[in-house]
Length: 534
Image (cartoon, rainbow, N blue to C red; front, side):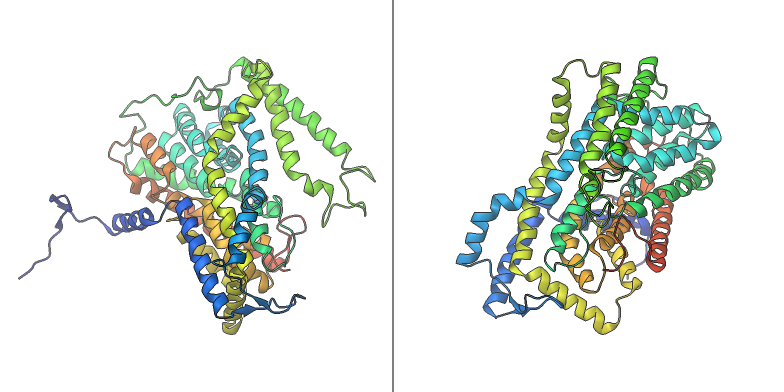
């Protein structure tokens, strides 16, 4: 006869209280996520699956026809054939070098790396925190966190502990600054008011995926900017409100201490100007920021001089900027310029740049840190090109679009379901580029056949992907923030971080989906020349 018990035997033979539903859910996510191969291996496996599948479909005489295309009926091409093997051997290098995100992302990151390594971005963050009055701090933290994606992944490491220090110095709860800064920085990673490497990365993958059906407007790094800028403004207020009215009161009610129980040196790496944790700027840093501002102003004026006058070289032949123009084609160059020139000015004033060799050295460090992305880009490029070359991606897109049309599920509801799918899958695949490469290959051409712009589908993906970042127990940044949190709560776990960030994630998901719906139903452009429908 068995009886229910509040205890269970663990796998290590010990017994203890049965975990709650939330803890069991996190354990399940972690188990499933840990079974997913590394992104590099995952795309190798996907390459093999497409290779075999395309060969079988080709042997069965499978065909497809893109609606409205002049190419007529097309046959699936099998990879495991003389033609397929020749295609790979002759196109391996061009597939990799021609992968749109590769050059664009690396170029932007050269500018970001220079601005980061000189200490410019770090000083901007610390300067914003240091000047904020006590009542405004939550909103300043949210603003800096929303804008922090220009620092790439460094935002998740630098901003939260700085926010904790500033909150404590102002007499507010440091854990609210720590977790609030982290929740906003992760959940809002893809909605910066600036053009960042994320825009460049996603747009390149989207454009590659849309090539299989040849539909829609060309996707560029600014194709989502009207939407992301709007979201960035709103998330600043909503994020600050959640920190001020939800998170901090919860810390007070829960009796979470304001003092560090475990004292650790949060200034690790303080000798590096991009990792300083002192909330106060010194005289040299303030001078550096002034000269960086002057350099930025001069750069902007120079750009305006070649953009605004009639007949300016940045205009197209019609004297306009849309649908295409040298200005839109120069976005990556302009982003690099507006980062690199102020960074050099700041570095020269503060002494972080003392000789010419310092500039390429700092850029080199950035490329070194991106070596993992370069390797992943190699295998992603081969998979996407094979998917397009065989015709399997187009066949899946056509069949998927036909299925949705048959059920009548082709409106905004289908977009919302896509957002929720991205939200859930992101809990298990933490690499945004890997997940989008996988999603884009299928969903971009499928939704394009239903009349949706590839850039709009990309925007929908960004909602689900960004807003669930903070909920993944597989995220390395959750582990890093847990280390900071344990200085105040030694018994805190990953579930503690995720539970306290959950209101942010759900609020941002609802807010961003609502804003996307407004752009959709009002027919507003989500970026220059980019609308919801083709």
